[in-house]
Image (tube, rainbow, N blue to C red; front, side):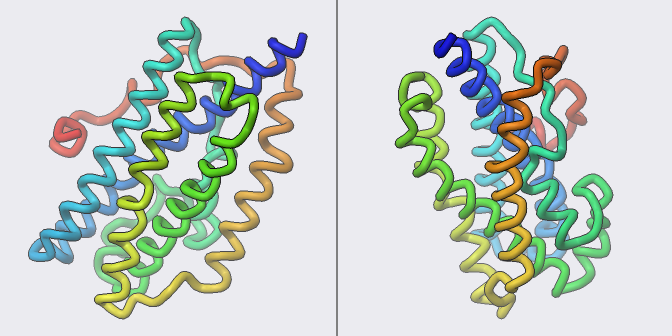
Length: 223
């Protein structure tokens, strides 16, 4: 009985992560569009955002391979488990898919805000990994630990370039309301969403992979 509970916890956790990694790299495509349009000459920043995108895709594929080795699909979690989904909604008032990339590209303050939100999300992810990698149930799964260790190693390169770019361009530190939104999203995930998934007997698994509907294009192919 304990082993089943442990396996369900690890599957739910990995399902949340694979969802967020997919949303991460597909969302960064929007950031890249803005960076290419606004700052094509700042090669160091372009390169950093492209690396961030490649890493998120790499992490997604590691989780996919993890589930393939288990012989099962991830649980069908939705946007309510997406940190970036909910943080964008609370700070921009719309979902990621509805975010007006052209408006963000044309407005310095909106682009600064988007960079701050990405930075906050990645710092939150880095801090959460430190906690997970000390968890006994997580440590019991060597394959999952290896994935989290790779992500932990990559994380600093995912938020530091946004911090450095904001500093160079006077984009400011994260605002109090942005930090408050991050805190609220994190607490609701840990204290409500994860327990509700664990206790939901009707929670179903996905029937296809998250990237099944990814659009073909240069950004995806480059990954």
